[in-house]
Image (cartoon, rainbow, N blue to C red; front, side):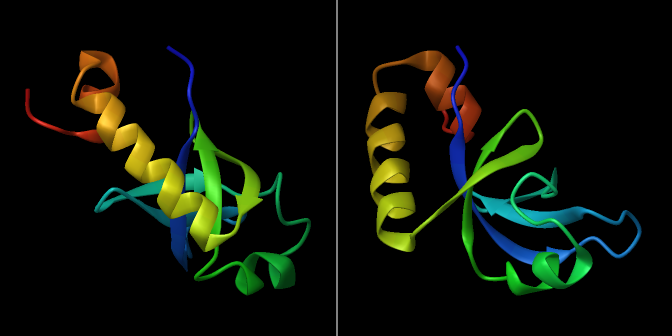
Amino acid sequence: MCIGIPGQIVALDETQPGTAWVDVCGVRRSVNIMLVAGDSQACLALIGHWVLVHVGFAMSRLDEEEALETLQLLQQMGEVESDVGAFLGQRG
């Protein structure tokens, strides 16, 4: 299954330019943010914002309401779809 999942940018990764730490369902992941921010100043401005993450890349920006609604729907799907539940780290 190929899905993107909302995550909130919590910090820039100081060791790798163009990457940030993104909180995805309580787990921090290193994500490349250069598709949504063109330079270091734009990267810094993204802290606290929501992005759609797919295979280690932030693909687009989301507003908080859309991000939370999507997470809720994914969590509901995880209750019936084992692969979505595994992706979200839910126990089956």
